[in-house]
Length: 296
Length: 304
Image (cartoon, rainbow over all chains, first blue to last red; front, side):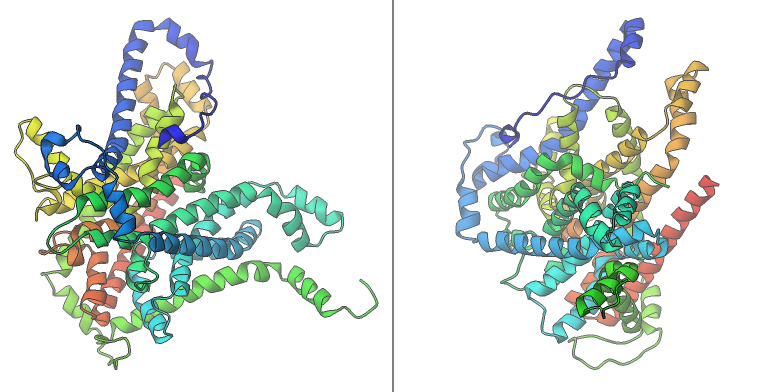
């Protein structure tokens, strides 16, 4: 997977300030940096080996998966992936996940970005806190009332209900990320635009919004990933036709036995899109996830 | 401005500009209120009824019967409470310490830093249900890699997720694997935004690196740590997908991985006992609010 990624510029060299100290205490530092390298490799293995395991199992036959002597030496096969798309017909689930993720993210951006702007500019802490409440409440506690309302409206099983429920995850996320983004934008630009004759909303649309594209991209990527990964809402609100990918995984878990090869292949299929997105946008994801976390 | 009568469009633009807080924030706030406030009130109402069966069935008010039933239930409710506390507390403590260690490790730049950071990010973005399935295979008692590793080390095989006693700790491990990176990211962001002067001053005064960490970095980083703990506690309390994906309905045949979230889901959608389920959720919500209040209070106290 990593080989498909274009090689970017090498990381910046360590700050010059570190260098002289290193020269002064060579022996001690050498041991320390060796230990550091070992620790970093351990961290790397801890987070990557399970993925490697999943990928390897997805390319094994069920005999090879159950055979400990075939842990590493096996002949890779794509049979499991063929089964995922052929017998389990995964394509519609992929489409469902994409559609729900795309629609809920787009609508959340539409509602969330202007709201975040207002909350940031007028520092409306109380409304912002209310948005946070949406993040704190366990989804299960909303699911029962939603289920009551939506099934009485005859909406359970529709894309509408899935998109609305996923918006509930993405909207607070987008408001939160965009708030900290807008707080970092200088107010002077808008004031200058208003002096030049733009209305306040005109200044927002023509000046602030274009400047905040990176922030919107960050928030959008994260919102999409969270929607893609969401399991709880689709579990009760989806129908056979609108089922999303995380639910489709359970097609491989039977009452009697689990089709491990197929299950792992399906897991790989679900994971690949988010991993590819993460590889290309890691900086944005990091800034999105830590937005607001370091401020008082 | 002008003396001619403004058109409808101009009037709308004028209204939008005069009330821009309302126009810009209104839809989002209205959506969240509709999605949250009504369900919360409705849950409170349902928790005092015998709502069950179909969502269209008649509902009778029964006061605090559901709460009485739950508080007297040492079979499923109280064990679920303790499991929730154990799971959240254990996972968050390990995630904070491990996350701090990794953040300090990655703090200074090194060759290949970019790739290590990407690797640390991957568990965070991976779909929790797929992650659960992945670990289910690794921890499978007969064919899993975990027991293969133990055999290699000469340790007898364990039941891991399939075991009645080990399931919850094993699933805590999965949570730790997936969410420690979140703590790493938050703490790294905190570390890079710290002022350098206090550390420099301590270095000039001859403080060792351990002393500088303990007396300078740690106190400065405390607010960020509280944020990390707050965020992780809230999410760990709510953990559902990994538990449900690996253990199924009711947290396994002996409810060995049944936390409050899983219990509430089970009452609602396995037994269709919406009244009882709502009561679980009300109590659960009180727990969460209490925890948030506590953490915000400690943070304020530190800031003073």
